[in-house]
Length: 439
Image 1 (cartoon, rainbow, N blue to C red):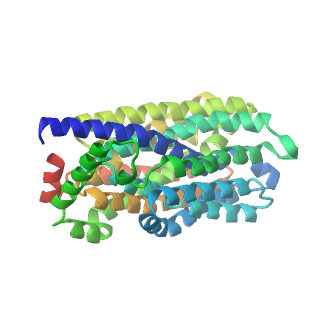
Image 2: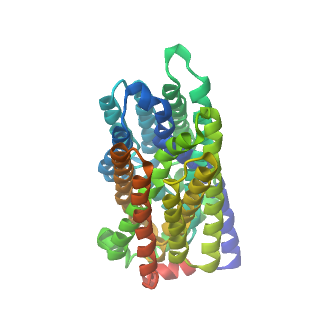
């Protein structure tokens, strides 16, 4: 690449990144918060509605059933309808469902609402991944995805103290605090859906924030990369879902997400039990600590992984740390050791994210990489269903969280072992794609 062309590419990529990534990041914060805030709502919701631990586990996990069933159809519709309108539709529909969940009166109502929430949100994450391929070359895609995915810990850092404060201080119109948690945290999705229609262009051709020359440059870059991959694109897309490496990563993601969503849904209740009567506002501040430390770990491990050019060992070591943390959580019965144990968990879980999601880019490029990421995410999210369900069932039967957290520790440990076993496997892009990335 000529120096002038490289400088132009850097400038255009920076402009695109500044315009799109922060907005998509905010959307994912809203999405993740609406997905996991049921964990904080449960602090008073379970008692008010008479829900057992097993019922809470099922209503938390059933979200992932709707998500799994509708994710692929949603992404196919997005590719036909256009990103702007379909992402706006996803936001508006999940906001409406999240609002409706606040008025549930029975466990049955919650099961239906949580399934519907998963179906409504389905397609958002892989849709954004596909959307990013419209703007970024394959070599720039991992950094864009990594910036977007920092929304996961940030959602918890923001959501924990906010949810705790709402539980303690908002009870207008005779509605309980947990209902207001769901209502107030659903409204941003509806607002964001409307804003998306005005802010998000369907692709570079519609990008008014770029000059005509910048649009032409970006289009030429993406077309050149597509032409270089023309000989391998069909093979990559056609075989992506059958590629043994992709299926292997699906299994790792499944085991990892058992841990991630167990932490997301069960941490507030675990800390509440260990804090012995602490207010919900204070509990929200306490819950913030593990997530804030996890965010720092996510940044540090991702930077180390990029610096050393290594993915498997970084992800494996991080998730092994999380496994040790889960082993400690079930035996922590006071607030300080409980916070410390959960901090170990989150540092491991969030540290895993960056290196792991960069692995498919080592052997797939462009839309094949986006398809692989969506498929791995879709299968992996079923781990969220089984994770929170099994923890709930075990807690209900034993009246002790240690058995459930022990099971999660073993699952997460297996994810780390699988990554270590795969670390020597060769991950290589097809020759044409590799040439495109080295241009």
